[in-house]
Length: 248
Ligand SMILES: Nc1ncnc2c1ncn2[C@@H]1O[C@H](COP(=O)(O)OP(=O)(O)OP(=O)(O)O)[C@@H](O)[C@H]1O
Image (cartoon, rainbow, N blue to C red):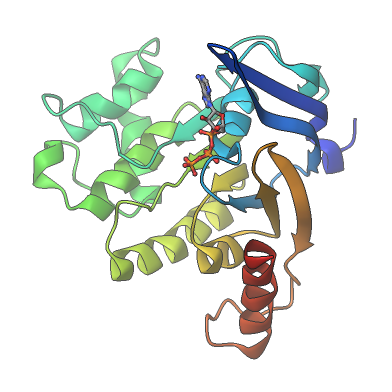
């Protein structure tokens, strides 16, 4: 196993049966993701993006093919995988600190307190330990959700439309913040998004999927030298190229 093949997905297919209907949610997926890489996944609704994430975090245990992380075959939910969903899923009756504690409940209180402070600092929310979720903006709540996902030091962070519920401006700011978090605390990230700009901005690669059956249509490398600027001509060219994949 090399760091280039940190996540290895080989010939993975996942079929659901609903009454007599067969749904090929994923078919012959082959994908490798390097350690500390950020990969974006885009595709039309129903092309199997969430199913793929559920497989990687071990929630879907029945599938064909082979899936491994760091050379270890996946069999069951993994503590080494953090997940951030579109909704922050913070418990409303617990404070920010208590919500984050839940992810590291087994540790002594002093250690938990230190970790919470460290990760709130990382997501740029120092001093918000005693806030309740309703006292946070949407962007702040999502940053707490990211802190909660990172506090247990996962090997991989899965993000399923993490910014989908935010307004356009907050969303753009959060994209920058996610990159800053990644720069400070390198981690392998796999992100599903419906936003092509976001996919390019955050990803080193953009995986374009098709539906019924869910397959990988394109695996596009974002040139590392490209400016993280939505108005940059190269950025626009790439956006058009990916957009074209959807309209074919
Ligand atoms: N538990 C399930 N039982 C039956 N069919 C399922 C189940 N989960 C997903 N599917 C089907 O598998 C296909 C892929 O679903 P999935 O949720 O992975 O798509 P998606 O790309 O994440 O969609 P969206 O962008 O709308 O969230 C869909 O046709 C869906 O109906």
